[in-house]
Image (cartoon, rainbow, N blue to C red):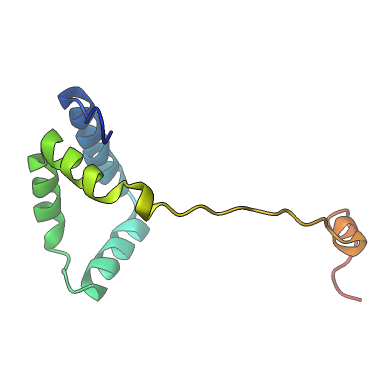
Length: 102
């Protein structure tokens, strides 16, 4: 994305997906309450939802590439190495019908 940018077709697709997801989320009263609570608790307020969607539609491919150049750099890269640990004998058997309470 940093080198080649994002095409207008890719950007249109992402915008359509975000808008569709927003419409589907409105089917859930739980999600509506969660979204309103999040926006109110961050100081944006629930009236910001249509404004955010409108601003999303105004984003250009050039803006996406500019942000990618700024943030997607090796100096900003974080690498995590996961070192799986073996399960103890006790925890291996707990999922096989044994009681957790002794």
